[in-house]
Amino acid sequence: MTTTVISSSAPDRGIENSVRMLLPHTWLQAHRLLTRWRRDPMTVVQTLAYPVAMLVMLDVVLGRQVTAFAGHDALYGTVPMVAVMSALLGSIAGTVTLRRECEAGLPGRLWTLPVHRASALLSRSVAEAVRIAATTTVIVIIGVGLGFRFHAGAGAVIGFVAVPVIFGVGFAVLVTTVGLASSNAGVVEGISLLCTLLLFFNPGFVPVSAYPGWIRPLVENQPMTAAVETMQAFSLGGPVAEPLVRTLAWSALLIAGCAIPLVRRYRRALC
Image 1 (cartoon, helix red, strand yellow):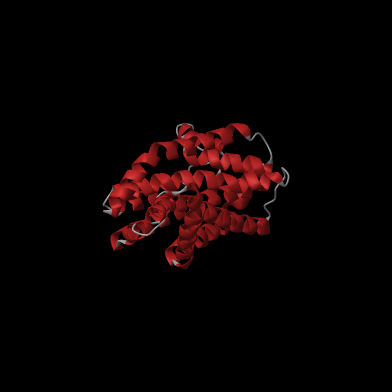
Image 2 (cartoon, helix red, strand yellow):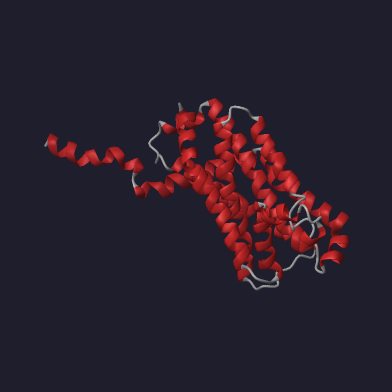
């Protein structure tokens, strides 16, 4: 009788790491992250308040000049650019939050609970995707109020929102890896500064033809450009395949190059 009980309960020892438990455990931890980010003033400012203010400011200050030069409403550049920037800045804010949690020992305490081991990092990607989709939707609504429209059909709306989600998750993997690898908090701040600098060197700010010839290769090939051009094609109309492939390639490169170091650094942070 005793033998029967032991054999039937033995498989339960690893039930928290079963495939069946991965989804609920991932969503549970993702919900925790989303709740914390929503209550964190820094995250709200970086991911929503600052991008929305920048969108309105760029439209008021530079909208007419860029529209006259580009031949179409400047919002078809600024709305995608601000949405991508919101995704990047939100990932940086999320990394800062993770560093604080590691310093407080929270991930280590969660690691001792009966939760799926893969859900710890996977939940961060899920939470990033939900956050980026939500903030992009808000930015689009603000853009529509300013005159932004979709000319490529209803399906283009889904593609438009999906681009910053895909690119933002890839960037989140990169910045989280760097944030955990370095003990210097200034490294993450340096990435934030670099992202702000790239804001002024992509086709969402002004058309590529407006930049001096010597800097155009940088503008054309920096990662944000592919995402912004894809979103422009989804909203304004035009070829989508080529910039979309570049966006997917950049995202895949970031995830593939940082996935293993991220797992190793996260495990080390638990110790």
